[in-house]
Amino acid sequence: MRKVLAEGKPVKLEDGRTVDPEDVLGPPAKRKKLVVVGDTETAEGLSEHVGDADLLVIEATFLDRDSALARDYGHLTAAKAAELAAASSVKQLVLTHISGRYPEEDILAEAAKIFPNSRIAADFDHIVI
Image 1 (cartoon, helix red, strand yellow):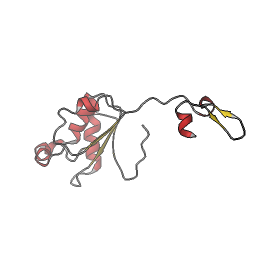
Image 2 (cartoon, rainbow, N blue to C red; image 1 turned 90 degrees about the vertical axis):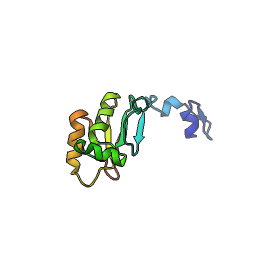
Image 3 (cartoon, rainbow, N blue to C red; image 1 turned 180 degrees about the vertical axis):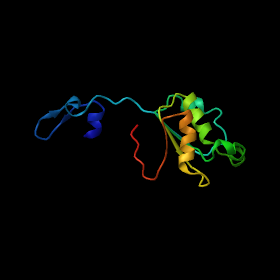
Image 4 (cartoon, helix red, strand yellow; image 1 turned 135 degrees about the vertical axis):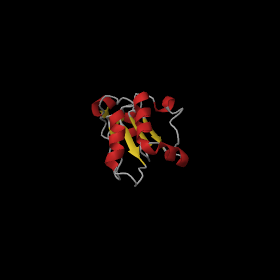
């Protein structure tokens, strides 16, 4: 029954009553765009895919001071992830795959300097898009 209503079709109940979609559903929600990017040594070419995303989840394993090491290991820096988000009109940035060599606050500070709406992912996070 739920799917029928969601498709905009009325449902007739056993007692003869009819339930119209507009009686039980709110206005249609605007589509949302979620982009998840795993390990990548460069953000090159990603802009067209992440453009205008409501939420970008991306690895930020290193700080920019270790950008050569990041490339060697096939990872991004927090700064590069934030630059991608800013250049791609992303609304919210969530950073993952953080190296234990850095305090999370340092990763977040580097990203937030470039893209203020940044945060670090945590286990069991609930993020409303």
